[in-house]
Length: 262
Image (cartoon, rainbow, N blue to C red; front, side):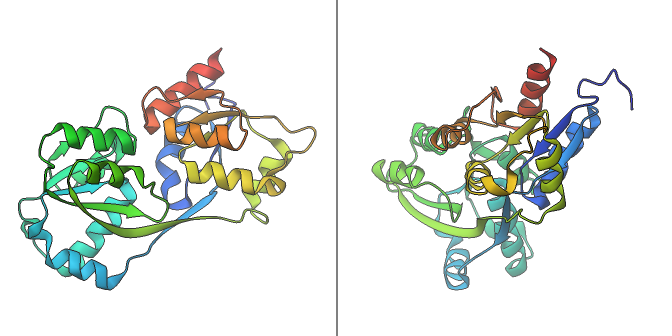
C-alpha cells in the first residue's frame, strides 16, 4: 500500500448497515484506510401489502411522490416492478428527494427529480416542496421507514397538502456483542468512527458495553454525515469531532481526511 495515500495506516470504523457499507468502505480503502465494519443497524423490507395495493392502484391520483431515503427508493421500486412491467404506470407523478443519495437512486430509473433541497433534512425538503407553490390541495405520497420523523408530513399538511404515507422498510439495531469486527474494535480501537444516520448513533449508545474500548485501544474521533445525525450525537452525549460540509458520503470522507491530516 502506498504511504502517499491520505488515509494510509489509518483505521476507520464505519457504522452503516452491512448491505450499505460497501460504497463507503470502498471509498476509504481506496484512500489507503483499514476499514472496520460495525453494522450497528439492519435495514429490511417491511410493507403492509394491503396499503401497498391501495397506493399502487391509485398512483394516478397523486401529484408528487416524495422519497426520504435511498432505501425507500429501492424497496418501493422492488414492489412497483413486481406488479407493473412498465415505468409509465407511474403516470404524471412528480418526484422529490431529500438528498443526493436519494436522488441518485431515483435517477437510476431514468426519472427526473423536480424537487431537492440544498440541505438534506426533512424540514428542508418540506420547505422546498412548499416553495414550488404546487401543494394547495395537492395529493402527495411520502415513502418512509419506521423511524421517519413526523415533521415532514406535519409541514406538508399545514401547507394544505393531502398526504399519504407508505412505509416500505424498517431500521433496527443490530446486536454486536459477539461480532468479530466489534471485538477487534474493542481491542484496538480506531482513528475515527463514521456515523451516517441517527439510528446508528442511537444503536452505538445503546450498545456501549459491547463496544467499550480496552485501556490500550485507540480512541476514535467521531464524524457525522449531517444535521440530524449530529443532533442525535449531542442527545446521547457523544462528542462530534468533524461533520460533512454537505450531507453525503463524499463530503463525509473529505471531512475525515481533512481532520486526520491536521
